[in-house]
Image (cartoon, rainbow, N blue to C red; front, side, top):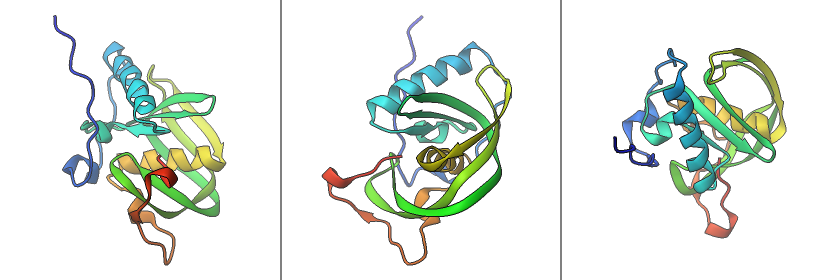
Length: 164
């Protein structure tokens, strides 16, 4: 049997980016293969996170690849957030653009891993920002919809671009 084609990045205004994704219900080998493929594409595209809608899949699944951390979240739910920080964010699905986005500095998130095991984790700093960014994708929200007061989402020179 011929292997499926590699995942392709979906960019705005694709409708899959603007709708709430369906929950993951089946935690099997196919899901774990998808997660592995998403890790590969995330790194290939120089991202720190990648949500299933960004590869055209209406599924509540996101992978995070940041520094020494690499994990996948299915059906994430933000339980709490503390502190607020404004920082520059970009998005693989909004290429060449960025803006100042306000996010919680620290979050507690409940999700299932690709094996279906329930997890509750605390994240801080940039990792908390990435988790929030990817979770937003699963709700049909892009980072430009969370701009800090007075901020604009604009084209950024390639050498200054931040990607989430």
